[in-house]
Image (cartoon, rainbow over all chains, first blue to last red; front, side):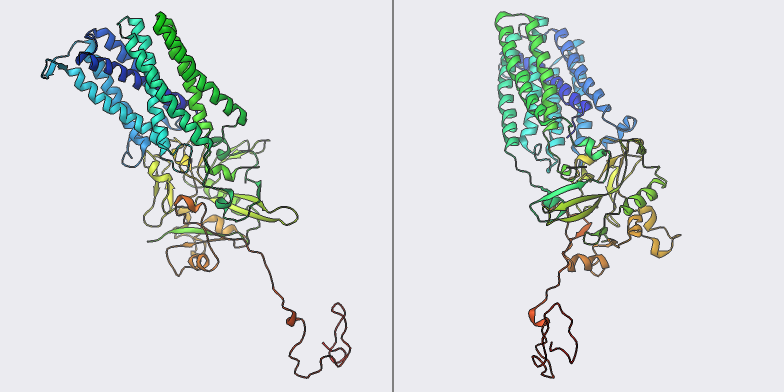
Length: 325
Length: 243
């Protein structure tokens, strides 16, 4: 497939924004359960939610560049019964709304206790709003992943690993950002977020490498024989019906040498997993928001490469019809 | 239930691309607006076509066979492009099974083209909406045309009658007979899309001759062998030779 930068930025930016929100909410929940010191700084949650919102809005903005008619984008919420894309179009603004309410409640201090459990554990209004946000966040991860995983003949994508990777990579990058954010605001949550970031990074590594191995061993169901319905072991295309390329040759090919895809694969393994893990390790042991911010920036650049490879590696069966001019 | 479709006889198609040009001519003149031509006279021409003829060489020289392969929307009975459309711009008409795009609703997200394994949808670079074969829906129901011309433009243009148009759900239609009797098949059956368009396979023309067809084994006059029997490549003449 042709990797479109609009979609690459959409999926990576909203992934990081979703992960950051999950990190914020995790810290609130841990604090409510008494596992962390009380988190009652309205600015910390307010700015954190704003940062998540900026990432989500950036992703949403990037997605408009993918459309031929952005002014008609509102129509795309219509077919949520059948289309995962339509579901994502609904889930993203809904989640952004939840993050806005969550951040505003914290920032302006409209946060009454709504329930007290036995043992004196108090739950604030934001815990309930945040829980709605978590459900919407996971729904959004599911929708984003299923947009790709539901195309059954794009066999590189048609796997639960696609959804798992979107979830884990997004969450890992969000927690890395939360680590840097916590170090910058000096809330004493750096090690908490850093630890989770490393755990999520390890899980994401396992899942992404599994999908790379799966794709390398994949046998495609469609062949040139089934594509044109001629049973012969030697078929050669001599004309594709267009001399100078067409939508079919532009949209479904990455147009780069195969070696670049292999190289990019190693580059993203380094930039998404190895380098940020090392930077997180250094930042957590020696302190310093600079290392942690660098970890997030390197990881984000790596995720852009990762998403590029995700598209470039997918072999669309229509390419069988476009092998030679 | 009606399911209109094209039947393409690969045994007859000569690859002249008359269907391609006539399709473009009809559809670029329609009310939906022209199909773009980018750089038409330059070195790298590109544009929107609903139908293209591809060519494949089967086998290796000298035992080769050239197959010309016209490719357009197959109007699948389970179209994977329709449910993925977020706006409902892509739809399959229940009354005749034609898969269409509402150009006024299409947002140009290209997701339907990703969801089509056959690569028959093309984004028009100028109108920035997804376009595809309409089975000449603005022509086949046009009662101002003579009945014989109420067919897709490609079908009318084909000089060898390689393209046929009809209802594949009607078991007695001409196209259904052809599919049944001449081994009509669908493309990429492995994905369960159930294309409505069928292809008739390219066939080798053979004529088997048995030895007794060369020798008159049942000569009623019993003249065999009584007169000189010339070699096979020499002329034979009644009452002079004994064949």
